[in-house]
Image (tube, rainbow, N blue to C red):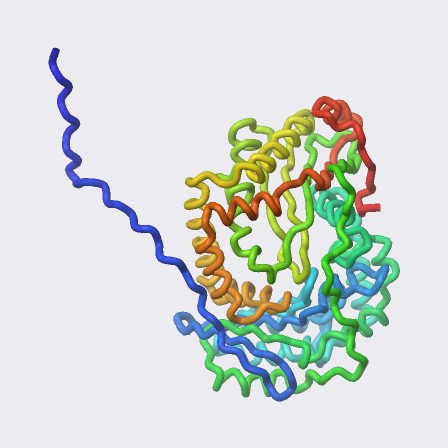
Length: 466
């Protein structure tokens, strides 16, 4: 019997072996405190003549909203560029545009911010406008009415966005009356209680230079930055009011009920259902947070993750399934989410719970251990490639109370985690047997599907968590 001829030799030679990329340790910004108490972080990057600046006010996010006035922090930040100094809102937008710069204000759960990106040659006039926005907002009653009307319109529109509704209801069900329990932009009920006087009071309590961390990345040195800040922020005065209340330090009072709860927000005749499976997560400062990035990547943090491969690629029930840990000062939320065809909601929920349980009990495969290490490295590298992204990443850390060297320290924990470490974290922080399931969809069509997978007790909620 003739033997088969050996395959022809590859004319290009043997396939080269790819080396494992070296760990990426993010650069540590230089930091110092200015005479007015302001903290500055500077990450010099001289490859392009661009400078990105983030002014961060820790504590001035939605977790600092006054009781029953959710959205106050965000709408205060939004009012800052609605007229400042000698400029009206259109003047600010026009002058920033003429400089080729971008300026924005906003707030997250833990902090508020004002951000500026500019060519270096235009940084001084652009920073002067930012200084007016920070130190001389007009808080015009006319602009307030317009902003408040738009705010309420956005909240009404949110009720027709099932993904947004799922997020709002999930937080309310998990955290209840804790500051983490209401959305950053509030609710219609809370918005109706917020007045312009509330905005002025919140600004006076929080928005002052000694409370700020200014994160700067780009083509500038400290010798150039200090005099620029002196001039641009000269009109931003220290606080004249009492110090705001300290942020809570104890863990949020998340739901402690034993057993998994299922909550449905009824949307009759909706062609899709949004599923959100949530539980308490970890604080951003926890040494467990960096390696949990890899656990999450295996479950739902990448296109090739278990949830997405199962629900989208294998079954075609969803365009995408994902999971995430929130980045907050205290333990926040872990959530696994998917928008699925209504007729497959029960099957999709069962599959999600199985995927989560299998990871919690069985841990990561060897392939996932290596894949998530590379994915995490790639994400970290990408976040420091552009000056805007680097400033945003560092500002996030400042906003939750982390130091300028946090990314360098966290990267060691990220890369160094072994399979045993990751498996232990998955068992402790992914298990949702006592979690909460929120489904936004047509209840009449969902109930028989849920009953078929053994779920008979169903709670109800409105679109704003009430």
